[in-house]
Image (cartoon, rainbow, N blue to C red; front, side, top):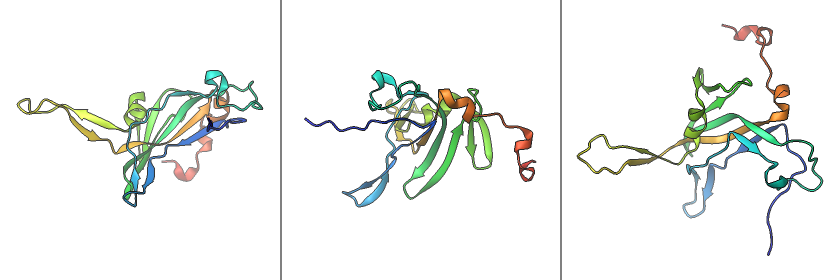
Length: 171
């Protein structure tokens, strides 16, 4: 029996994961978007299960515990769509949605759970009809995740001072 896998010597301070949401469908000879539900954690522990992702040469003194920093979302299909992001720009737990020129405060549920993809159910508005909920595919879902290693977060996510902002960008 063969085992297929990959072991890592180390992980970077900022871990960027692209979720494979687009693939080629050989049967139909087209690219398709995968809208299946994919749940991702707020915290990602790559040392779990006795470091099963680490090679024997890896430095085990570095703790590979990561916290989600941002979620890039694709809304639409393979031939077109729109991108926006949910980001925690500071060390607080406050999430923001960056959608073109519009920036809004968002809660954790909106930034994570609503970006898992899959199907959503809505109740019928007319109780005289079939009582089964209406199901529809969610076409907005996470496309890329950015995690920051807990031990490095103070070096990576730092406070922004007024002098750090270019004068041309100040309103």
